[in-house]
Length: 193
Image (tube, rainbow, N blue to C red; front, side, top):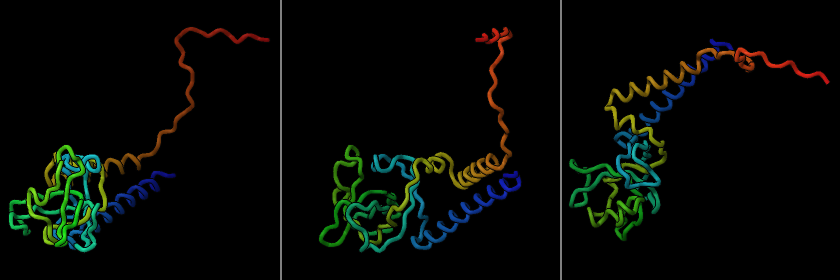
């Protein structure tokens, strides 16, 4: 493949990735009313999710959430309402739906989360607290966001994409078959039968 074809192909891949990410951000943020992308910052969901994993949420009707779903929610106030200006954003699994239709959640790591969050830490969750259902998790990609604040993290991701593009676009070096390395001494001539 010629270098100009490789360059166009690489540029096409970068453009497609940028358009998909930007489009998903716009569509999902309009559905959720907030960013659909979150970074896992605690061990509470190990082994399912680890610190630094990037998770993407999708807005779903509250009635569609089932036991076993991993959701992103805002910690409710003491009265059980949201928004809570002092609440955390939490990623946990739904372990029960109570008789009032409210959600009981718990982290998968039973060492750090030996009992459900609700009603021990706060009241069971209503629809106003749920931000979405986790639909995708990308291992360790969120570490960039944890270490480098926006907008520098976006610039770094862009530079990484550019580096990958340039590495793919550069012409490949032709390799020749390996030849024996000479140590300065002559090898004996093969014996004749």
